[in-house]
Image (cartoon, rainbow, N blue to C red; front, side):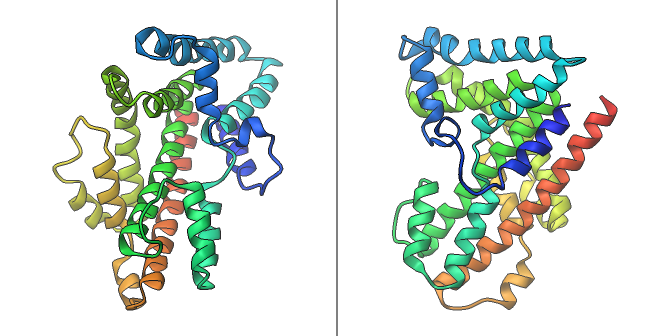
Length: 278
């Protein structure tokens, strides 16, 4: 049933617009934290706004599982996952950016990118494109991590992962326990993402980029950025190389987009195998 929920979520996220505000608001997780916890910071606030919803979600879906309850799991689980990972597909977003870039519409490219991702600096510059690629990769990784925790531990684990990330954004200071939990929840999905990137891209280059970083106990962002860059088809990018910064940036973004799409296919194979073997 969880695999069916996952496939339905991925299909629905390709829909263009028409979503209710509760699913589409960029600040929906922050609103949830503010509503659930009268205590704005500290461990009590974290338990009320992060841990308690995760526990309740786990208990609810465990109670519903089986028989006719699976229909409710499908409906409620799909709605919950859309709320957690967002209704806007990262890949459709990049499709739109690629169209703007190929049409040389730099202003539309900047507005759309900065609306969806935390990017600063001069639009179209190499640093701007690096921020764009990093933001795109992080959003796709959050999807992969949610996929992993859904298939292995269920809906409660996904709630914990996503709301803990939202808590960190809300309370960047004095949240050492939350940062440690986020790093722990990212660790296994990040290594599986590296494997997916290796299978989807340049295997040798990815393994070399991952050397010395696989066993670090950190948030894995450096590992993901380095391996995603290594997975890109360097020869194809070099053949299309140009001195025009916008065109060069779009070539790299298109290459990353293709690699991550193939990595998503690998992740779905992982999920199907887990569903068969579990």
